[in-house]
Amino acid sequence: MKSSKVDLHVHSKYSTTPSYWMLQKIGCSESYTEPLKLYSIAMDSGMDFVTITDHDSVAGSLEIAHLRNTFVSEEITTYFPLDGCKLHVLAYGITERQHADISTLRENVFELVEYLNQEGIVHAVAHPMYSTNNLLTIKHFEQQIILFKTFELNGSQDACQNNILSRILKNLTPDAIELLANKYNLKPYGDRPWEKNLIGGSDDHSSLSIASTYTEIEGVSSVKEFLRGIAQNKAYVRGRSSDPKAMAHSLYSIAYQFYKNKFHIAHKVNKDIVLRFVDNTLSLSNNKESDLAERLVSFISCQRPKYFFNSTPKGLQGLFRESAREVIREDLRMYKLVKKREIESSAMSDVWFGFVDKVSEKMLKKFADSILKSLSNANLLDIFQVIGSVGSLYTSLALYFVSYTHFRKGLQFCSQCHDHFLEKGEDLPEEQIKIAHFTDTYNDVNGVAKTLQMQLKIAKQNNKALTMIVCGPKSEASGVVNFPPIGTFELPEYPGMKLYYPPLLKMLDYCFKQKFTHIHSATPGPVGLAALAIARILKLPLYGAYHTALSQCVSRLTNDSSMEEIMRKYVIWYYNQMDIVFTPSEATAEDFSNAGILEEKIHLYPRGIDIESFSPSNRNGFF
Image (cartoon, rainbow, N blue to C red; front, side, top):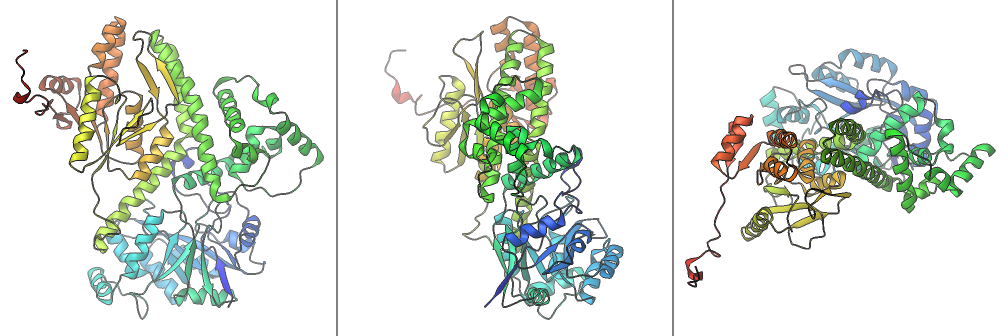
């Protein structure tokens, strides 16, 4: 029996992008997928019907309305009137008149839903567990359960979030619905309001993930039957969920398409190997043959890469191009993309992550070397110039930071909903404190390393979830995760002592996947800075321990009072970022307090005694 498939949540060029501050900051307010191109991609992806759900607009749907197997839809921005909490509601099979009515009613979700029900419009609440404007609470979600019959499993959200939403809805009972209806004085819609319908859509804004999540209904052959099948709870959600890498890939694609259109650079793509890779990774190829001149340029650029790789870089942009060429040349999958060889779309986000990660690492190594050399020579002017370049580099990584923050925030609210609606079971045990402890020194021979080794040993003995995050020479110790450094700097004043530059994106991805609940830093060094960044991006508590009087060490090593003062101010700044600072003595605590760190942040953590090693039973009379 025939089944029909539809991606029920896609956006065209008439839709604003998601409200991610970084995209707004660089001026990207729109997607650039033409409705006709979107229709073609959807049909090529195996969809039987096509609709476009632009934000508060039906322009995209109307542009393809003359084509077969299409219907007009939109994504409505609506609000809870008392506090302005924003929701997105998907409405399907509507007319232009109904769109006009919706536009006048959408400021109040209660009035909007009443109208949609009166008109018999099939509708669903989109990504119901994602807080669009950071105001969503359990109370709002409870009201959604009363207001809506159909809920979306969103393809741009985490699989855990979609799974828990599905379980919450499937576990609803008549008593639960009656309780919520009385609590909020709302009348549920439908004969059996505890039985909810589920649909799926990709929520694509970039044309890269169209039909990655879709809705399938068996035994229907028309749009009218398909929409009726949704209302009759006959739909199945197919496809895959998303992750931070996929979301960031989409955001980079939106930004690239924005600038590609704004600066009319399409004709330059085949003339530069880096631009060709970026274009093939961040936008869908139309697979049309180039003209003879473009194919000739393409042939030369691919067959003679040395010409492109050996050009001299100029400034930050030049350094990026040089680093990008090296990365593309060294990676077979990336070089295939330069030649337009096919790679599965699901793997494209990993390829792009690897590209951004490797390029940023190459650039950061050069910047870090420059900073430390300038610091050794007390050349502050060069330091500030390089720091400005580092800031520009991390701005280019910001879309990854936004993506990981987005997913972490979604998982936090998802966990709250789970605890509120479902009993804890084996499928999702009660969250355990899980600590990632960052340190620049673990395998070294010094007091700090010995302390950390003992802490890890004691944590294992007491079944505590503690993982040491280090960066440096390979370590085989259990409970230690070592990230190979992207670069090394040996201090000229202290031969044998090395600083290792940590791979930030790799560490961030690892900490997100491991679902750590707390970040702890034993160092204000490079690894400690990575810990600070990761804690901020993932919105995790950050604790720090003060182990070494670094300013005094710098004074002894350099015999330079100005360098000592710089280090002292840096250390104070660093520990001021912590939620809690552990100090080894009351004198250190007092010094920190006098320097400006809030007293409530400072906790005394005195050194302990290993009573097994220093037991009286070990006396032998020597001393």
